[in-house]
Image 1 (cartoon, rainbow, N blue to C red):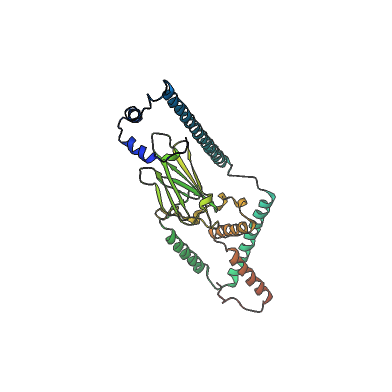
Image 2: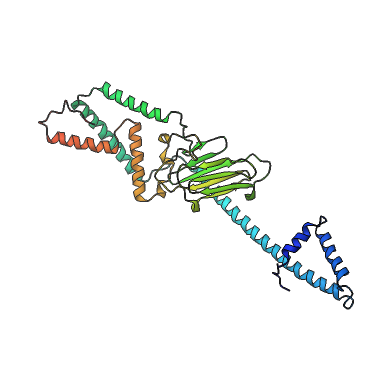
Length: 332
């Protein structure tokens, strides 16, 4: 007898569906057939038929118990792996929350800070020198700066202020970001502990769908930009909260929203210091630090690194040509 003989499954399933009494009624029908249409019970010595039935039962019972134990072992391993992932994520979350906001500067950071202070001092001195040689009045320059601020404010009008994690807080979920990744926390108001089978999570390169099975999704839309599907993940925390981790493909931009239907945050108000610059390669890190420096300069009304280079070139040219009159010159 073959353990994998499924040739009659279709026929037997059709028979089983016609027995409202379930397995007991199906077995009774089978033995009734053997009694009425065969000599199964009377064609051999007493006890032979019963022995055959017991042997078949014991054989298939053993196979069924082995399959059950294998399924339980797989489920246990799966739960153990899930618990390890949850513990690891919870540990990392607690570590990030307990990490002090004020840290002792390393020698490299202290040197960079001192360099920025010196540059700021030099820039202020150079600005004073340029004001003396320029025909533009302070009132005119002030008016230009005010107009520029008004234009920028108009673009950002209505946008939300980023939360402490450079993301957004919404009624249904919260999200944070660094330059390289995005994390979401989606709480579900249910009166039972969530399991994987209760949740629908679908990752695509430019689309995300998250929700409770049988209910309208909490998130279902086009992502702000593309993500690495193979490096994105999700898990359930405390039986109530689904956390989503997305790995950005473009690690040189801030997201203003998760999906296109969400309100936008004002990325100009993002605090780059919250990002892990140590995770970036040297080239990307230098570019990010330059962006951070220019952002600080703009917020203080000082020239950016590119503008400072132009001013340095101009100052050097003026020193080399003192015979030239720059009083009526206009510079961009």
